Image (cartoon, rainbow, N blue to C red; front, top):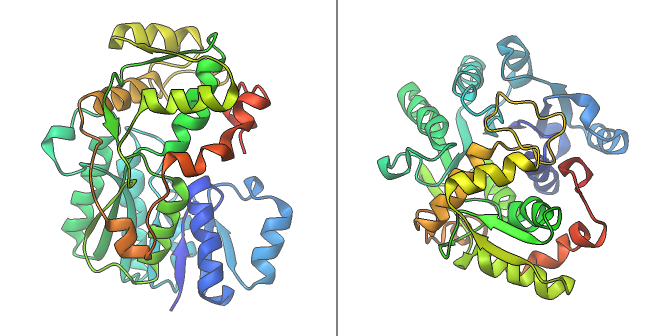
Length: 318
C-alpha cells in the first residue's frame, strides 16, 4: 500500500505527513511539495532517510502529478490556495490520480460544501464544485469538511488587532462557531488516508462553540492588554482591512499585506460566524481518531508569541 500526501510543504498537509511517518514505513509514502525549497533541509533529509519519496508537483501541471502519483493507492488531496482558480487545479489532481490507479482520495473541503445555505461564503463554491466532480468520477473518496481553524483567530486576527491599537474589528458579532484546531484536522486526515473512514463526508469541527469575542477576551487576559472588541458592518470591516494593506480579493497585490488572505475571505467568514452557519456540531473527529478535539482554552497558550514578539506579518509566524 502506497500513501500520497500532497502539499507536504504546507502547514496542514505537513502535519499529516509527519503523522503518517509514525504509522507506516517511509517506503510506503510519497510526499508532494509545491516548492521543494520550502522544505527545511534537515526535514527533507529526515524524510528521505526514512525512505519517503519526496517529489515536486504542481496542481497546474498535470504531468508533474502523473509522475508523483505513480504507484499510489490512497491520496490525501489538500485543497489549493487560489480561491476562484482551484477547481480546475483540483480536477487536474483528481484526473491524474485516477489515471495512475489511485483507489481512494481524501479531500480537504469546507463545512456546508453541498448546502445551498452556504453558497454565498467566499470559499464554498470551489469546494462544492470539487466534491461534485469527485462524485461524478466514480472514484472512492472522503470529503473532510473542515471548519475555520482556531489558529487563524489566535494568530492572524490577533496580530491585526495588535497592529490596530488593540481594536479587534469583525463582522462576527456575537455569533459562535466550533472552530477547529489544525492538529485535529491533521489527525483526521491521516486517519482517513489510512483507511479508517467509512463514509463520504465527515464534519471536522471543534468540540466547543466559541464566539470571536471570547477569543479576544482570552488573549486580553493572557497578554494583560485590553483588546477592544468592535462589531462592524461589512463596509466598515473592508475599510479596516484595506487600511492594514489587505487586498480586497485574491487578484490584489499581496507583497505588502500582513496576511495571506483577502478581505472578501475574512469578511465572509466572520459574517458566517455571526449568522450561526459555522456553529456545526459533530463528533466526527473523535469517531475517526479516537480523541476529542482540543478546545480553545487548551491550545491558546501556543500562540502567545504573537503578542509577546510583536508579530506583524504572517511570514513571521511559526
